Image: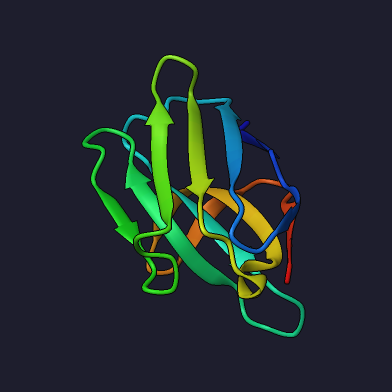
Length: 118
């Protein structure tokens, strides 16, 4: 069974950086699109970024373009989200996801809290 385990969340001041990691296991992910979603209190879940495991092509939401970078390590079966120039509005629970398509995904991690203080 697919397991996605996130790590790397925490509290950071505005302008700071955090790196989220997602360790994937349970099947071969080479045909998948992997992604990061986030959900802030009282808001709908938002797709932040995704990456094709095979080609490495990426997508970013406009709200994070130029600040966040999604990348993968095929050997370690891990997907990362490097978050720079963080803003208070980036505060949310961030979820790793596999088999991303049409704004949702088939598999989800447990989520990791990111809090950006002003």
